[in-house]
Length: 215
Image (cartoon, rainbow, N blue to C red; front, side):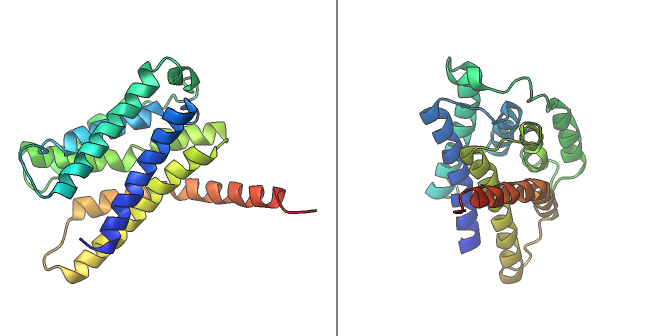
């Protein structure tokens, strides 16, 4: 494992911890899209079907369990926790996320590395992950109010994807026959979707810095 892959995994893990911290400690999910969290739960459920049948390492299995457990925990909090669910911006989180699922599944059936159930589900998870952030970005555009923890969560997700692109570039030049077009293209699409958020995030940060400058 190279430094870019490890940094990407740790950044991804940090994004999840930041979101869980916001929900569990503050008892609020304001500004968080349930639609995006449901899509991520589906992403990890379809990607890690082999969690108990295909062992790679303790690290790999641990990360799979963390992402599966955390994604479903977040969905449960937002749907069923008696306090947290009251803070959910249901009226503004209206992106029809289910329309993303079928096209991703059809694409996975047509474009995959091998036409087996596990490989199709793996490709489906990659395609769905590429667009799963869309409901969250739309919600942030509508509210135009990014609190620190929600902003950090989305920022860390974008950083995780950027680090994974560096990981792929590194492996392409250091490992023979390392070519995975499905992973690369879907990852690039996902990273590009964060561009608008990053622009708005840094603009908000700059404005906040100006407000704190002495007159």
